[in-house]
Length: 119
Image (cartoon, rainbow, N blue to C red; front, side, top):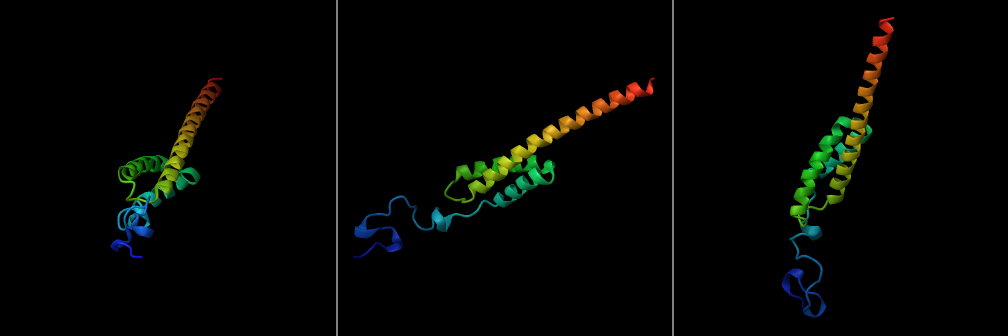
């Protein structure tokens, strides 16, 4: 039994169904998005260490996901980018809560200090 050159045919000369040709997409042609690991690391650090990094992970993750969605056969690490983006969203929400709590703390501190110095 002979197969067509390039590995496009299966047994009996039928084409391989469901797989892109070699060199175009698939495992052989896909590369990781260049910012995929960066988005993931920024998302983790933005959640755990320094929340100021979280909005950057969110923004970079949105841009990287747009590029991946434009050419899905080219990039292979969509899940890493999406995870980093979600961590960036959670970290940004926490940053907003911390800023609001700090603002409320300052308002209460000013109110308490203002009333205690006038007596």
